[in-house]
Length: 194
Image 1 (cartoon, rainbow, N blue to C red):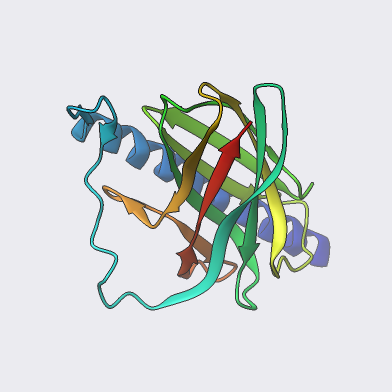
Image 2: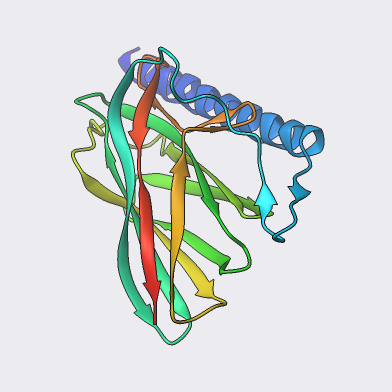
């Protein structure tokens, strides 16, 4: 009897995470259709950003750190702090100038989480979901959770890659095991390209 309940709870958790992932992908595709970026006079992509000076209560933090450069390759790692919350999933919006960088890949540094990236027009959306087979707590304490690979297009300058709080209806957020959404503070990274 207990095994059936344990299996049922695993199936329910899997179904929940699958629905979360599918709804995130659907929202992302709807947003991409709605807001096609426009090119400004400088050739850079301009995006409408939500007002981040609102009364949103932030907890935790998601930031970026440079992990290395070799030839025209740049590795950036995502650092996360969930403010003591047990996390089951998170979404990250990362902006970069595509005349300076080209997104290559994203890899989870935690074997218990899978990353699902979507990159278009200088915006990288990452949906990261915890495996349903892992029942251990996932409290993030300034941990390096993702590795991002970029190809550098320009050299000899200083450029920015930023975690964005929101782009359209897509937001950077944690989701805890009780399905509560937690909005973290976000950071950016200034990269000196060699």
